[in-house]
Amino acid sequence: MPSCIKIALFAFALFCCGCNELNPPRPKPDKVVWKQIETWSGKGSSQTDTFEMGMAEWRVKWKTGNETPGTKGKFVLTLHSTVSGRSLSQLADNDGPGEGVSNVDDDSRPYYLVIDSGNLDWTVTVEQSIRTGGR
Image 1 (spheres, helix red, strand yellow):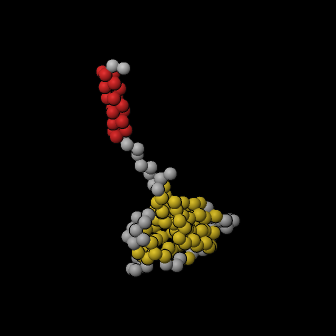
Image 2: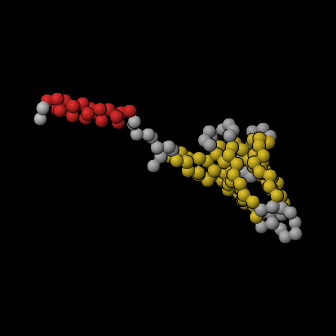
Image 3: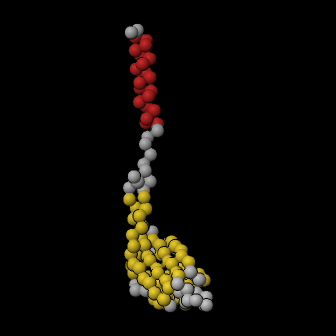
């Protein structure tokens, strides 16, 4: 084989190897898994126990149902600081049966929830995100 062809093949091989460095494999994004921290259920108004949340992303899921026949159900969910007792955020305001999710973006501290509800059964769950390596 002539030396110019060998040189051309060698140059082509080097070029092909160099292409991979220009397009490195992309890291896979993290997966988010939601871990249940606390769950409360009831009928009527209530205040939850205190729960502590760290700096991780977290959310509150709620679901209402079993509306008392002939009446209009109401559900209001409010997040409070255990330290000051003040209301931090209204997470839900719903008439009748329904469900929803509210993401919370606040400092690390202890919290509690206030549920103002009438004529509905309700369930409220606090969840914290856990990031895992992408797969």
